[in-house]
Length: 271
Image (cartoon, rainbow, N blue to C red; front, side, top):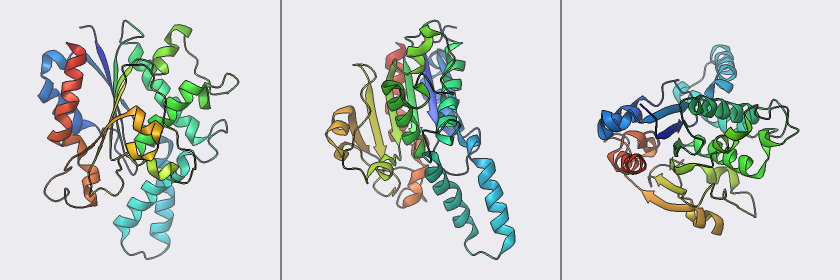
């Protein structure tokens, strides 16, 4: 069956399994039904591979060299916060982690494009936590011809010219962000600029929980964020053990308050 839409997921910070998306995928399949879901090309982006082997190496050295209390918490902080600190370290250097992750996004988009008839096929992206910063960086660079999109960059995507608009996400219709921590990356700058809209129909919906200390509203950041973000939507994320504390950060993708509008957006683009 011809695919009428591309649905992309991008995970957040910390130690992450390759099939991190299963809960969300199953919830959407159930909500949308087989007839609609078979018209969707699903493409998960997994960028943790660029970081995780090094993190495991450091963790094993630390764990075996001395007695450490609160090991589970330490491991969470090591993996999570080293993701954030490493992501933009020497970002402009060829071969940097930043550019490696951008190339991973390109490879995933190229894989999706092979399943489609048109470069104008609508795209929906769901990004969580650090993944929100990752996709924001990618969109910014694609529109500004920076990062891997600089012509003289060694990592410049090798693709057919007619596919470039698709790879630059110019057909992106919806960006859903959950537990978004973009403010942590830009709070120290005087001039805070959001990505330009990739097309006039683009909508950015940002979901946060007031108890999630890693998830923030975005519209208050600056006039440009207020303009490009359609809504900051507060929900009660997570189960009974998560929803009232910072663990709510991990509960968005199986929450009905998030799944319902996401499925409605997908259905609206298919029909």
